[in-house]
Image 1 (cartoon, rainbow, N blue to C red):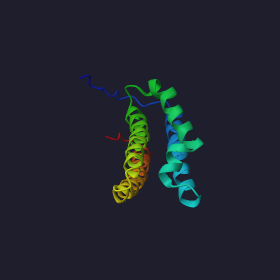
Image 2: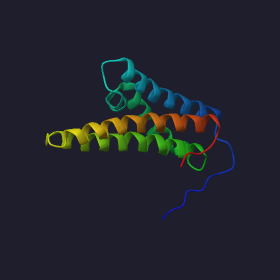
Image 3: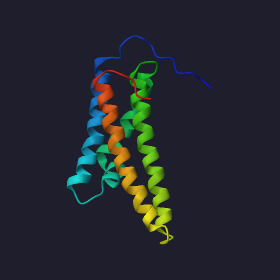
Length: 132
C-alpha cells in the first residue's frame, strides 16, 4: 500500500481558489435540487455544475499531489462516485417494488450524506485543513 506524503509547503493560491469554486459548483447543484423540480441527489449527480466540478477535479488533481489540497480533490471525487453507486443500488432495489421503502431510506440518507460531505469539506478548506 502506497502512503500519501503531504508536503508542508502551501499550494498555489490559484489552486485554493479553484477548490473553492469546485465546492461552490457542487453546492450550487445541491441548492438547485432543493429549490428546483429535481431531487438533491439527482441534481448533484446529473447537473452540469456538478459534472463540471468532477471534471475539474480530475484535470487539476495532479497539481495538488503532495499538498493538503489533495485530500479535498479525493474527497470530492469519492463523494460523487459513491453517490452514483448508491443511486444505482437504490434504482435496482426500486425495481423489485418490495424493497421500495428501503430505496426511499437509501435516497434520504444519501441526500443527507451528500450535503454533509460538501459542507464538511468546504469548512475544512476554509480552515486550510485536510479532510479524511
